[in-house]
Image 1 (cartoon, one colour):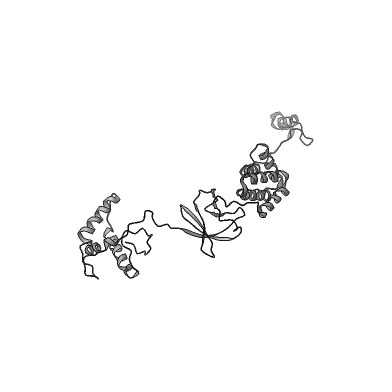
Image 2: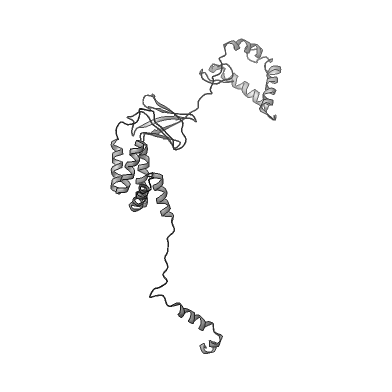
Length: 281
């Protein structure tokens, strides 16, 4: 039984008014107690048991409050029952997300765009395993609804792309130019190809320069451009591999401080020769 009063609820019985909620929940608890301690090999077997229980006992008993047979009351209500919805009730998670410089909010490591004009603002977000809804927290207006994406995915409604490059993105590109010529070229090529989608990757490249130094990032960007792979992922892997490489030590074989090996050989021979033992003492 279900005590919800909205017509969209996937209930398996009549919608009940709040004053009858206790009676409905009491019946559910009674049915659960009848199953307590019983074991069934399959859910069909459990359903058949409950059907027999309803037909032979639950439906024929006299309700303690109404003093009427339960099956007779159900027969009166049945013509007024609504059909079940085709899809179950949607359950959403809720949160607040700030619109990033690329014009998107982040949900479960995927990115979704509201309409233009919300850059930097905090919006309400609802999501489940199928949909993501972006809502204006001030008015409650549904701004956009997107299909849920896998991590790394991105959804932007056609026509919501900015008509010109935002000033915040131009500032990021200028910062990349100041790092080095190669870094600036790579960032501008990513932005020319992907638009505002590349903003997060440009920020990632700037973070690499702060963490590992300008020289390492400049070298990685130069290699990426030379081999024709102007991607942030390539630069990140290249810099990470250089950092993880063990320090290569070069040993000298000839040096003024290193004696000739023959001298070491003669010294070891003298120390191990038994004929010279008496002379040493």
